Length: 118
Length: 110
Image (cartoon, rainbow over all chains, first blue to last red; front, side):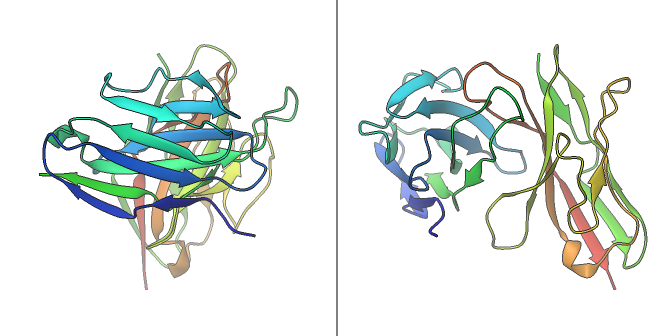
């Protein structure tokens, strides 16, 4: 079946511009994660949704970052007044619900959106 | 604080040589450890997890709680193993977010 998709794949923004990044998770996946990956670094957690509920937004770097998943499927990560330090690859991942036993369900990653802020 | 350390940015080996990608972690509790791999022009994907105790593509990793390590090993490297490898841990209350290391590039030379 189709994997996680993200759009756009590349985005160039002028400093101060607002951007919106979209994630389409695997159908039926309850959990959705956003990560930010700066050049030369591993992905860093931004926020987590279970269905439409945003249960953890502890990784969002500032109040310029906002994420939503209003119907429990597609999610949008919005960055307001972009800054040069926002330049990174933004990764979305989805999984089925985590179980108490047997460990975490596998997270499936999208291809990412590469954001460049000039 | 939860942290994953991969001390090598780049590991270059010859085909057929053994490979060991190092990973150390710090976590107060019982984390779950993973290795993710990203081949050229492909997306990040799970390679293996310690809880499964299985070998994938000839790779194995053993969780050593005493040394807080989860090194990835393969006895004989193949050219198609060339990729970026990330060690990650999870173990949080909500949704099991992943904490990643900075990654190690494995280059297998012919």
